[in-house]
Length: 83
Image (cartoon, rainbow, N blue to C red; front, side):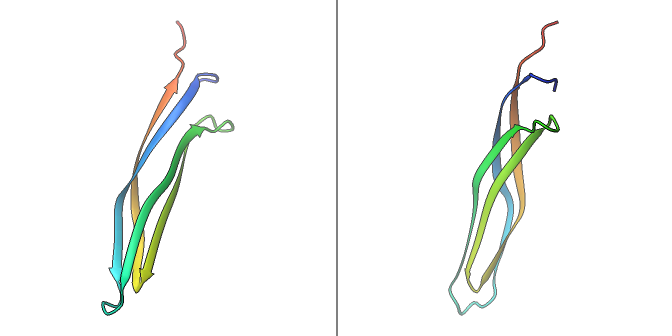
């Protein structure tokens, strides 16, 4: 993208794969997963679109939890150059 063309970027992020395990079935357990924030913007130094994502995972009791993969889509709005 040429200098001055970038106008705006939006990002959509979802959890694509998660896993959790109960280590001791006799104890209560829980697991929660969340996409807390997703933001796309132009990195001035590299001139590339940068995606930043804040994810959260919590495991309670005798459980463990992992976010294995995320899926994302970034849409960029740019000014067209006139011919």
